Image (tube, rainbow, N blue to C red; front, top):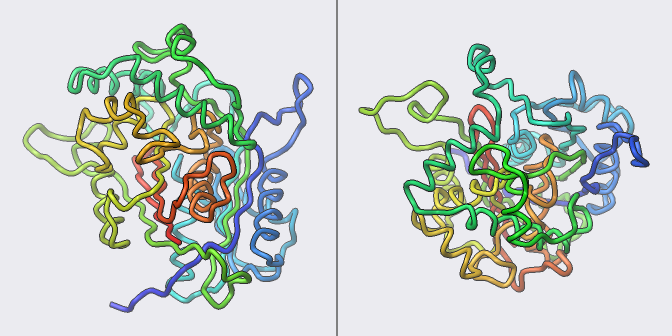
Length: 384
């Protein structure tokens, strides 16, 4: 098999995640405004011009047909291939992976991955479920998470307070992130007093939706404008579900690995690293319990251990394995098409030493993990 060439992150751009609907004094921005703003910031960060970009992968979920073309039109149409991607909450990491592959396979030297979203209001109305299941209400995300949470509590002894601590940690980290939607801390008591959404999950156990844009420029070594603190892509993985772990499928007699198991195995093999090598992690926390069971499934601790480690400060900014240093989805917000790229951007900044007040000292290797309906599991590992 031909060895793939090294791929580097040349620059990143991010907008503040917020609500841009023009209501109640808020500014009005469309998805193409947010996406193009992120592109311009990424170009500046990379020291590049738009004419340097040879291909673009554009991720969104609710922005409609040719959303990437509409976004790039604001920068300048130069005839390059523009590929629009919808892959649920893994859309951004899917764009990143395609950009990575285009350079690793030596098809192009400079490629951009862009993610953007102007999110619908209210619950995410997922259309990934079969229509008959949607009509029965199976696609109500808080309810689906609530059922998984009840099982997790029964199997591990985790409590509502454990889940509340995830929110408290991430909202505290968010106070140090100027691009986060929520930048005020919350107390354990405030989380537990928030209204019940789907028992045992409360309002402050859930991440907020948001609008926002992200851009990441990848390139070959020869195209890097700056050779200091270079960031290499050690792994970029995307897997889907396996029989027994998808809606309406499975058998008590057939046991297959979960999609997270599959993606992690591939990520460790591709990068040559393991869980103990990671200095910082971005875990998927669309609902607070998800951060805990994801960390366990990714191999950072045994099943049922994450709540205890959280209580002991293991995942804090000053802990042994800082998790969701920018506030995660819980504080940063969740513009679906941009979310997974935002996780990657945080790892990039951490290992370059550019994370400001939330910087993890000495961080050199980091991992970002996102889940998406389908299901999908995506992993990106960056190293300096």
